[in-house]
Amino acid sequence: PFNIMGPVFIWLGAASALVGGVAAFLQRDAKLILAYSSVGQIGYIIAAFGVGGVLGRTATLFYLTMHALHKSLLFFTVGHVTARAGTRDTNVLRGMQRSFPFMTLIYWLAALGLLGLPFSMGHYSKYLVSASLYGHAAEWFLLPAGAATAIALFRLGQIFTGRQNSVPLRTTVPQKEAPHGILVKLGLLILTASCILPAIFPEKSLHLFHFLVQGEGLAGAATTPAWYGTSALLKSTLTALVGLSGLFVFRFDRMRRLSSNLIDFRFGLDWSLRLFVLGLLAFIGYGIMVGT
Image 1: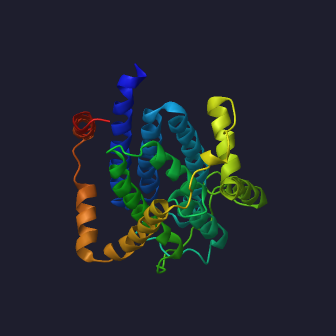
Image 2: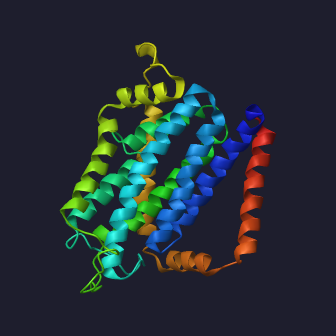
Image 3: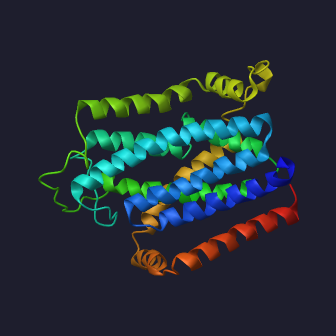
């Protein structure tokens, strides 16, 4: 049964990655950007799971762990700053690095790692997903999905490092809304270390995840992936460049109006679900036609 459902999961994941990535960079609300980007990142996990086998399951577990750690940091840093500022609008909230230097540093470490920058946990996990999908047509849909997510996270990062707007901070913030203090920073540092350590020792991390999947270690040095092959580096570089270009694209009034119109054009819940299901069925149908 899994052999029958495998292609469905692969194309379902590819659809989720692309739709979630595009929806993320069209948002202005910081919380929605992170939410839709999570939909996109889960698409990578579903696609690798659909491949199956030892490599597919290892890639799934590696990517799942990477996303959980990095996205936790993103939600906390962005949530902390937006709660203090009293707005989640990324077109209004900019340049908060002076007020929140620690949160700014943690945000960019997590964001660049999630995008798959070389020497990051995201780079290794994305490499494993691409390797598991090697030769499959769905792999090509993950490239624009990654680029769309990069634009979204670079755009979101402007609340920290963009040109500063005059947005007054709230004078009093409830503790439950914006926690702060040494314990919070300690927790963030522990999470950050959990993101960095697997990136420093990628082979050991791969051995661990392989052991969790297979119950035994990797056999021999010949199985060590070529983490920094030309293709892997090219994908990482292009993703980062596209993300940076998105910062300039959204400076044009026409592009900002277009994204606002797309956000404001609402179908209602029923129509949104119908369109989403139709989109997924189209991807799955295409996958069945081109084969696995």
